[in-house]
Length: 347
Length: 288
Image (tube, rainbow over all chains, first blue to last red; front, top):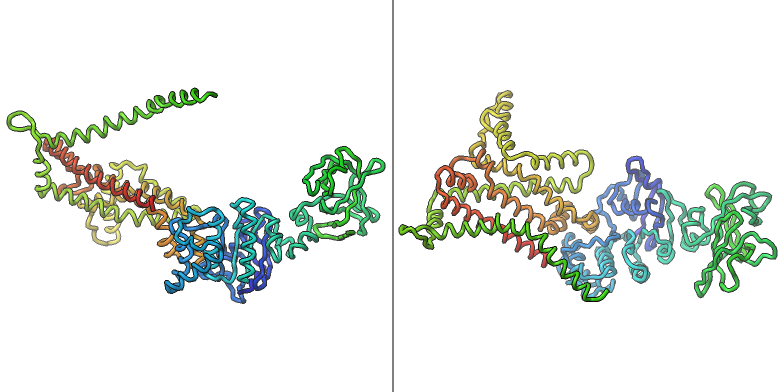
């Protein structure tokens, strides 16, 4: 297995900076998810690691060997593409055997390795099927097997489940995680789905406009987002623009004590960390709508200036539209100039 | 809505649909199918000395025993084969370049490749005579630097080959380009990812995916070249000559319509053989 090291890697397309001075070290056997909205540069970065794009600057090393200028066919990486990219004129066996034949392996060895990998991805006996005879999930498994059969040092997955339905996606990502852990292969996984990243990754790299916003394990990214962007991008988050004055955050009648210097600030509170209580008088907000999901309910809250927040409550029956309420955040963060300046957890 | 109404409406559409396709079908029958059968009948059902008509293969026997006719057929097959052999690598190279290249140069190359489509054959013929003919542009350029004249291809079998290749580049490039459009970038990248170099990618990934397009391109060009007239007539030799000019001369100069029709039927048989080969190959590839 291998260590991937990315140092100050940049990529520009004309005047567009797709990736800007990106740094990351992926440990042996680690699974790192590159997460970000469309256009954040995550696929471009993956393609640079795979050799399909040439970095404008910086260097990429795999196990200490510089691969920045090496063409894709000579890199020790294996890539799984979003559209599967199977060769439809070949059957499953030939799709998997193609790379091995190029390496001039003996026929028996090719057969043994292809059958072993097909077995690993749960497609034993599918070798003679044409790719169009397979379901979307099976096609994606073939694409994964095609990369794994070559035993790459680094496995690159570019939104591999994007074209699959939700149920299949969840099942496949569990299978990929199991397989990755069993093989101990160093893996980089690109996704714009936060659930996928949270469920799969050892570490998540949140990207925005070609830059790194945060690199941390999933629980840290969720519980301690480094920037308001990460806070808003991962999970559901209430972001309230306001100002701190005399040790309290203020926004349209809502006040919260925070031990930070005066100035503009953004308060971030997750719905599950925002408690609400019935107000004895006018209250800081009122209930706009209650949506019951059975196990829990979401209360839509409207502040005095019309700003909407969400609170997750255990029982929908306690809350009615129009009810005056007060807000009691249990865990929250305060951001200023894109940096967290205070965190609190009163749980 | 009652089921009977739906059926009634569906039935009402049938005559409308048939009426829409009737004019082109009738035109094809009148202009193509009928002349074919008429030509075959006229070359097999010949006048006899008693003033009647009798079944005979005399005109075909004459064609296949006459060395001049056979030479003309051979030069037509040779020209067609040589043109196809030149067209495929030239146009495949251009199409591959256009498929994978970006930028201004690719746009210029595409413009140049498509340009012959807008040049009438007769203009092209005279342009080639002015360039490659005796004392043409090439000779003048060579002469200006003290080099000897070229052996001009004008009025040799290579004259029509050069003209027909140039004339057929646009359609061949367009057909191949449309085939290459079906080969996704990701399938090529996947091949490179597993270790394929450019030659392997072309041989194992691209070529099998554009086999149908190659067959279509070859069939179109072969059919067009086999029955070409203007370019072989203006640029080609007087003897042997390609089937197009041969038919015209037999009909007009020798005033022998039956023999001319026989030559047309034989030409048609070769073309239909190419057509059957193309249809069978495409069907076989689709099945696979």
